[in-house]
Length: 404
Image 1 (cartoon, helix red, strand yellow):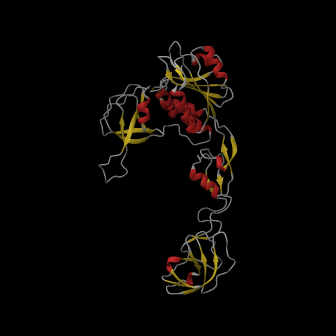
Image 2: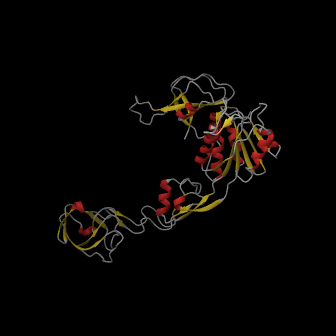
């Protein structure tokens, strides 16, 4: 069996980018930039007022000074007036600073009578003015290629003047579940049958990673059914199978894939849950075979498949897991030769008021059966236990992998 780190590195090493496409800004949420984002203009494009008030010369803006209001310039309606000694222009938030002015007297510090104001305190140069390019200058690199676009990034692109963005094409992933015992939720099910939770859970995980998921009809436990199902995935960027990759008499995925040209990289990983993991290729298409147990399928999707899809979209993905330190909430026994991923809740130590940035407390569930979805739904993280790790007491350090 391969160790987890080697398996992850080997899967990621064979991933190639999917290419790029151009999409309107309004459709770019969640997409990944294919090129660096450069500013098409400065922001702000001119020097503007940060507050409502009066633009003036700082040398005139002394306490008790009286200035003459010569114009009014709302935002979007700049004045051509050049401010002279003893003059000011009424502005509002976002108004362009008129020529000759180098300070903004906020209205709270000015007593106005008719067309004159009296300053109640001095106003230094640059006060309450957002200078041209204060946020960013024209041509500045604002975001790097490979950046996932969230609301903040969409706003930045809009401010930089981009109506269209070049993004990575979403990988098209076929997800195929196998097994005579599974049925779609809502369909008739036999007494010993189960609803196909793994198909929807894995698909959601891959969609969250950025993929366009195609859920194929479930395949029966026969070579003929599996081979026909594989044919439906021929035009996608990756095939992910669920179940049928173990060693049972009806676990026929590996055998059936070999019949249509599978180049097997590895099979079996020293992890729990998730041991019967398959990785290979048919031609240039990556194939990942997940375990059939739903918890194991999601853990393997999180550890192996989602990062592979992110790398397909040009995102920077490390070969090593993105773990973080935590504190054990309960004692854990010694581990065997497999790396454990224990479902756990995360809490904070509210008694340590002097350390607001204390590490989270990770408390594993007593039961770690890989078919218990109720426990998975309550988990915020996976506690990672190295192979042959000794017993660990409550309060000792551990490493966790957060679940989205």
